[in-house]
Image 1 (cartoon, rainbow, N blue to C red):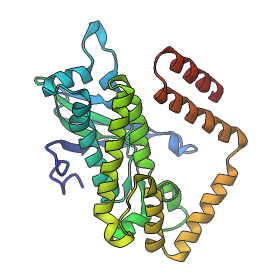
Image 2 (image 1 turned 90 degrees about the vertical axis):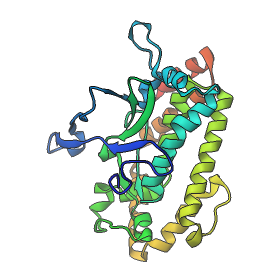
Image 3 (image 1 turned 135 degrees about the vertical axis):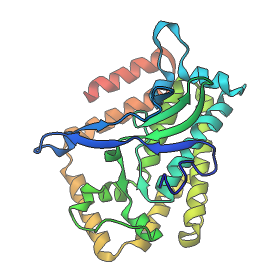
Length: 295
């Protein structure tokens, strides 16, 4: 896909690629516990590859944060406009290319996304995505679009992420919105600015979905209705046997979740919601409470 686009995110001047992942080492009894071995890009010495969370991190010897350097170099006077045009909009364009247009659910959160920065000009010139294990194949979407898909069988539900993508087709955007936009940019934008940024992001994702699928599932008027639109897509794309297997396995997995895991999930979600909605010492105290109970 990177080659098909010439390494440029369509509609932008921002380059993109996947971080090379050449091998992994781990125990046979726990295949998900592998350590991934990555090669550094050839231009690593002359360009900065900064994880998303690194943009707002305090740096050594009192150096300015990367996000402040990018903001200054952009020439933009408004923080919200800078965050939208220079950071979030290119990221949403990449998300839409990979997930909406090609049916691959991504995890573009703070760790898996890197900004490629020209160290001479402090300008963003590219995005790099890593951790291919965090990707899932949206079987229904790719089948609907006529794109190649792995063979559908019970083993593929986990191996290729068919089940996760079926249960939560908006998972990629949830990661992106909650982790990368709300959380990280909360250390750069005001609460009001973040709210406006999320509204723009929701509108953009809705537009890209309609551009791709409206002619088959109808126009979706509100962002909140996108999960229902994905269900329509699944109903059209999946055979009765495929849908039955996915629904049965999803119900079984949900019933297998322990009470402790369920309660832990509630408190973990509460921690992030409190952290994102409250500012200052009060918000931090409440967030710590939720975090401790979750642990």
